[in-house]
Image (cartoon, rainbow, N blue to C red):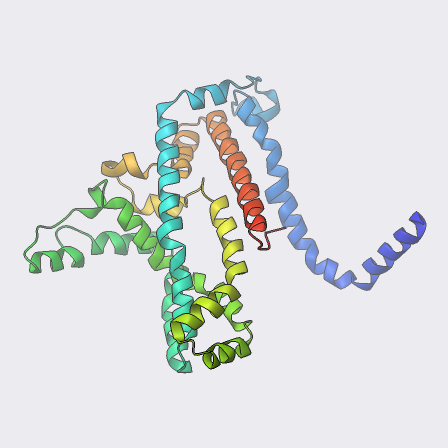
Length: 306
């Protein structure tokens, strides 16, 4: 029986050999850049020194984690990371859904394509450029936003130096850059909705908002659920480039997140073991969040990631 099974496996492999050849570079990439680096996590349990190497550095057990959890900086960084991600989840996550619904209702094809292209463009611009644009727009002396405030008789606001306004600028710039590109998956999901459902809704007297509520949103619910799982899995991670392009010394108390903290302490100050412990903590919490939310989504009747 086992020999028959192996024979079928080899026959299937030979039959689809070209597909496996195409898959091979992806598997090699995952092996080299995703799985082999996991062995480096042992640095978190050592007092790593470049001269001694990974295997020559002495073991210190949980000492790096004890140092991490005893640091007040860690809790500040953790709070900032979670708060910014919660803001992203509450304010930025729904925007692509709304944009996709609005674009889906546009019937003039050339106008729809033009809008889509305009919405997609910011995604392909680096945060270095977009960050400079945001800072220029919000400048208290020459920025367009403060120019409008002055024209309205209001005092200028130094948005990028305010611990209150900086998170607002962060979320707004994130929406500006990624919301348009995020509509792609939702528009693809809407394209798969049976048109007869809309016709039946019209016959039943449903107006446009009712059609969206009872046909469009249920039709893309599984896509929303999967993207929500992925977004929640990133709850412990905020993009380094975005933060680094917008932050400054005046708002460190709200802008220092795990990614920038790892760069400052690990790369600049050479505290590799300490930041490796932080990275391992971040990964474990992220994995726990993905498993938990995936389980919750499946309990609610939707398909999860697996």
